[in-house]
Length: 155
Image 1 (cartoon, rainbow, N blue to C red):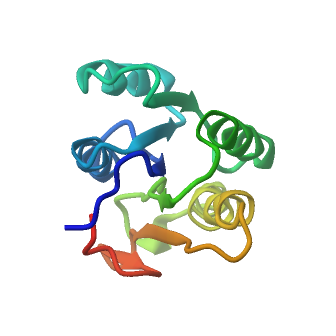
Image 2 (image 1 turned 45 degrees about the horizontal axis):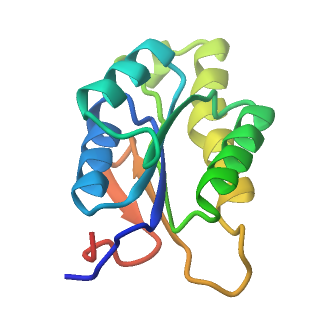
């Protein structure tokens, strides 16, 4: 197994579900973890539940649809840990209905979170240090699978 000690992971959508699971796995691998989610209360609960020490983990309320929020996430993650080794773009939304039932506000919300959220994260966090390995992961809600842009077996 590859040693990930002190490498840094930023995880959006970290307050529950797959993001929560990814965070637990990163902590077990002795990594620095930046938890990001729009739901601040759940995010703090997640951090407390994992019994993470403050020097190895931070939790930030982030709306990935807002470029300024992602800029703040990037600045704080890099300011605290120096760089981002793993970026888990996990924030995503879905509506349990037929697409024919979506109205324009539904479509805007889905596109803002799933597309623009990913673009903001990749643009602002995906390449903070030229010439080094970057590993980015995202969850594709439409296909219900993990999409990896690098090999994730090392985690």
